[in-house]
Length: 332
Image (cartoon, rainbow, N blue to C red; front, side, top):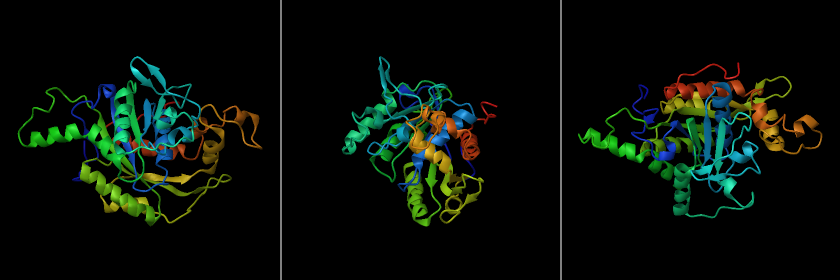
């Protein structure tokens, strides 16, 4: 499925890249050329919006192997991967609903602060292992949180997910259709989301990511402008923190869809930093007992935050791009 643009917004794999992905309907890469723009927080909140607002079964894979952040963002410290006969079983960010599974290098480290000192080949092997050895199960969406830039991890994920399809399509254009399935494709629909902040220094680096994506054939669904303002915790008004409109101008310049702007919500950031995810972490000084028990955790608070509707809208645009019919609020 593609837009009127010469650059497609999605590509359907001719077959599942690995048997473990047989029942994954859509794969979304979260990309940025710049570090510190909030890819992991965007990945986490997009996953929660797809699950909580649209009722989707979601998993998030963190392939930032040397700087894994998703477990911290979602308050999953202390959780671990379970080994089964079928492979690795990832833990859930939402223990009650079990609709958001998370896999990260962080879960495999003996200690949370241990560094990962690996060269490219070992990184590539681990990414392949994540894709083929994790028991993903039936999923509407697999979100892949990537490191900044255009490094080994990006090249590896493209090779594993898209190269067989790109090769088959290229041969088909020359008349060799042997690599194409005779029945309708069962492969997942693959796309990507670019994350930037409003400042030009970030936009300049994300432009490189756009060109990388087009060079290696990664379709881009659209652009998210993160940290576009500051939500006042008292009145809810949004005040610009930096410049504004960088994400929109990037989308316009490169003929991409603009998915939305996301301000900084300090109450949600506080729950991410001090209260944990679905279960909550020990309360900081001055916090109530209910928050200490987890009622104020990031996953629990997300639905009542100022960002819930913003990410619900972004999720809806992603769903429309991949041909997935948006549904009403899952808990309405």
